[in-house]
Length: 384
Image (cartoon, rainbow, N blue to C red):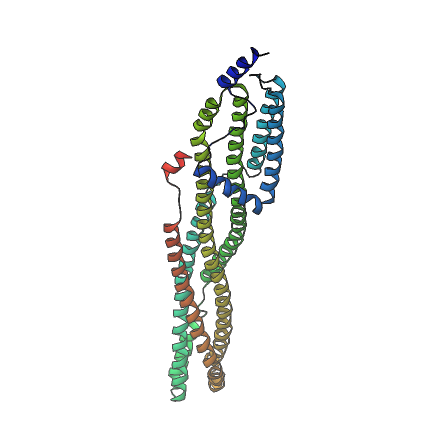
């Protein structure tokens, strides 16, 4: 009996007791990440569910290890090792499931590239439309000058000159050409199509921003799964080796675990910054395009009004030219409609000027946002 005690004591000194609690040195990086993880669990039900499952599995495997490790036994049963392996596999599988729920390449910006190209193609066509609109307005203003001069000549009783100006007015015809309406329809259709595409892209970006929460969850899962894996392996080591070995093992894994947390956090932060930058550009283009479509609708209404009014003036002018006896009657009708015609042209001119100015400003704003657009450097991409 007495002879056995020194042997047991010697064994304890050499190998350490497996029942001694395992102490893992938790540095400030661990504390920071674990605190962040605990806070994230309270904000995210899915992460909280994962954490609950992780606790159950970890407690189960550690209890199994404790039960299978006797005071004098330096080995583990195959059943215990199988439990450890299965626990680690299950934890990893949980993380993989979350990652697979959002397989989209989060750094892809092909949508943005296509959108920006589409926008600048659209605004280039819009600038062509503005030029054509200005030409039509100039023709309308010339017709306005001619008809006003005809009225003035009539009031001065120069009937010959009046008829001459009325003929010039009828020859000028409709200031809005077929090319103008074809270009108008093309630009309008393109902008409406862009609005639809912008709506779809905005929804995708909104979804991506929501998925930042998912990626935050993934980064937390990766960190805590790695941390728990270290804990389990430390318990396994404690069951078969001396405490110094446990300390060495935990120390060796300190850097990888800490770097995983920092890497994951930097990943989703950069992702969120990129997506928010994309959304800023989309929002700017969407506002510019929406305003452009609404302004084109206003211009369309005014153009139709000018056409109706100038059409009425043309009929009266043609009537007067065809029969000199009704010149006075025709001029009276023209005078009644001339003020409305003039006001409509002025209003159309203001809308056209504002529209073209807005398009130019919008292009400048988008260019500035693209220049400030957060991108990922080649060096950073290589690091990922």
